Length: 265
Image (cartoon, rainbow, N blue to C red; front, top):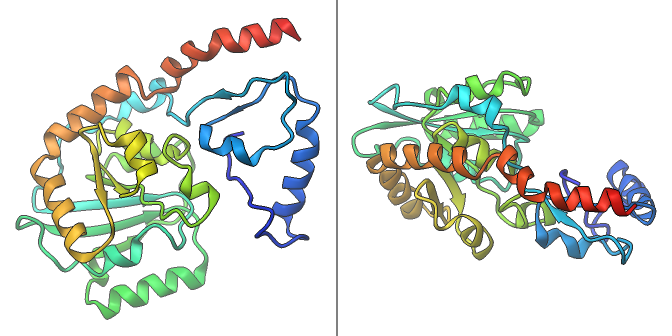
């Protein structure tokens, strides 16, 4: 189970997500093996059979795919290019970042790039905000990209945005479940994260993890720190990806558990 979790108490009863989630709850009663990317999400699955021991498989990228596109150096020394990829909506700090795009970071200009699915009204809101703040030339939406093209595309940027303000189950439990965090790191990018206990627990010890509470001063200071420490952070991200934050390494550790489960059933 590696997709978003639905809070049925807050969902429209007749929505597709609500219907699918209810059917999923019933189907889970018949399973013999269950995996999910975050242990914190276990509490939202009440119907797991007692004999089933859930297996945690974080959403790490494939080494054989992402190792081909690792970033070696900042391509433009005069600009710090920030990128957010994925489903684009509120809760990712984009409004706060747009408001500081006119601020130099250690004499470098800032750019914000978005790639992924976005509703037209929200894109219009962001574009209007960029225009209002006089930074429209620093803001660009690239549309949607096939997953096969994402690694090469993302390797052209300097900092990955993985901010998830924890206002729902999915965002609040994204420390090991948010694939974009580890895909950025796989490409040698420092990662900008929301500063709370959950994300600190999973990512605080990494030299490529940088935290912000989204206030003006916090964003500026964090981006300055990223810029100053960029090369060390990039190398650390690359090394961590190769050594531990990849699917192949993770799957080797849990493969015996899966084998035992299959043999038992």
